[in-house]
Length: 201
DNA sequence: GGCCCGATACTCT
DNA sequence: GAGTATCGGGCCC
Image (tube, rainbow, N blue to C red; front, top):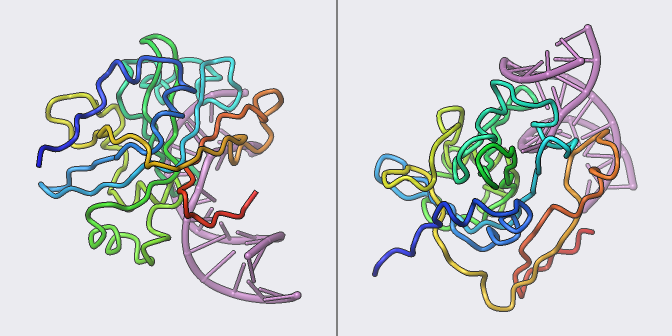
């Protein structure tokens, strides 16, 4: 059985909000010593340019934000709260800083490895942005990693959303004291399965 | 189920 | 020196 096509760079070199929306249902794959760890992308968030006061690039080009100004389709991995790594994929054209934060996936392959790293029941393995990086073993080493490279250890496979699934659009999470209108931009996207019993919000 | 809080270190002011 | 795109444990319903 041939594996699905990987998302090409042209997918990422488009408006960030469209990229975030269309990443839902695609499969994030991490090659870990020859083994596949993967999951369907369930939640994403768009961070768009220097004007977006929730985006790290709000204070311009720095050592940290440099990757966001670079080639689309590369990973922007940053450290926060003194403990956690966050995985983003760079979007838009080179020179325009933008990225999509991956906030949740549904574990698909490599459950045993993920459980060993996380020590949690399956439904808790990857349902948060720092949980999924922990489960997949993603840290600073992946900052700048090219998801579109031939020999990528991290990439996204084209799946197409499951039939009957719906997309929930909401404001972004955890922005604290970010001023309007950025605080309320509807740039968080969640995939709801046909038979999911999601009741929150 | 929910709320509160502490951990922890990196980035920019 | 302050703030942070979070998590998990402890506590109280």
